[in-house]
Image (tube, rainbow, N blue to C red; front, side, top):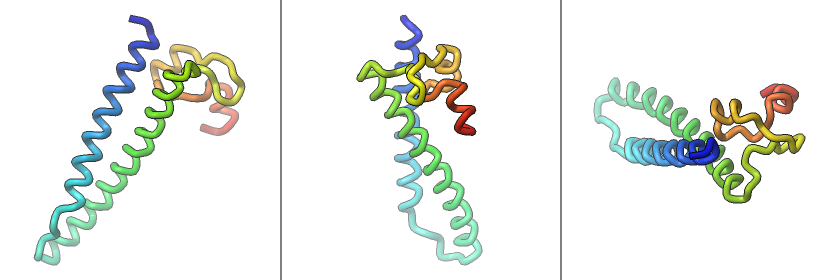
Length: 109
């Protein structure tokens, strides 16, 4: 199995995991609030945390989907800024990376 295949497998597994998480978040967000005012305050705080986790999952899911699209198009592992190959070591750490280290640093990422 090549590095590319391993990374694709990881990206697909992570995508499935995030989709499952988002499904649970949506289910949790649709629950009815408690009648108790103090419990409602706690539930609202929890909802804010859940919303933040959901937003992070959506962002990561977008990055993963773009990486999988690049794999399908044959552009995976190529820096979107300078066009040079992204080192495999970087892709192993951040499989959805679309910039090489130099371009990412230049953009302050």
